[in-house]
Length: 312
Image (cartoon, rainbow, N blue to C red; front, side, top):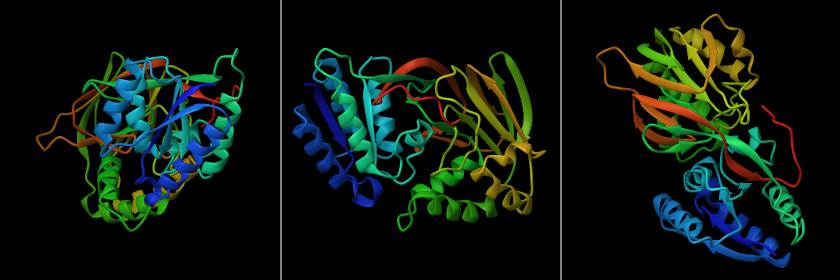
């Protein structure tokens, strides 16, 4: 029997996460585990409650029911603690679950996998997979992608949209933000190598996709101890519209405007006089540049029913 804390973001997935959370609690409880449901009035309150539970050794594992934003809260509470994290993807994008090879569009399948994983036996450790997480100079962590250009502006626009969800919301946000497309002068340091360049998009990926399956960094892996840095140099609105559909297949990597490099410590800043671009990670607002990102190998333990290969 495991002591499980199930954190449910009732607002995730347009409200469907509440019912999914009920099913997760019931399934794990029926399997004989000591299950406690965590509810909170806000994201910060949920993260604080998770931190208290970890500090008090109140759970053998934490299960998060929600989207990437909910998962982001758990990552910040559990990074480097050794407490396993189970994922029931019930949000709109679910890119982290997608990139981990876990169910990202079938919450009941995710619940079934967790029941299988926690059913390993009292004498067996909970089966987990270690993955990297990214520590930011702001003091926060993320596990997916950090955006610091046009893609961050799209994220900010998408977060204000309530009538759409998932990939359609991001597609509409891209189209609406096109009118404001312009390049900035960035300073990007990858480990000790600094580049100054004009760009419209700068993204750092620990995982491969964002926005419900847009494969911005298709070769990124969550367990290689490296971050993938994507830079898109200035291009027109028409060129961006032609490039955009390719990100769903990951074929934009062959475009002359797109370049990649990898590193363990990334610093992003701007050299021009305009207002500092805002940054987003795991769909959450992180604040303006500059930021420094450091990948921490094996910072998180993800509950899996059996070892699974790294997937894009």
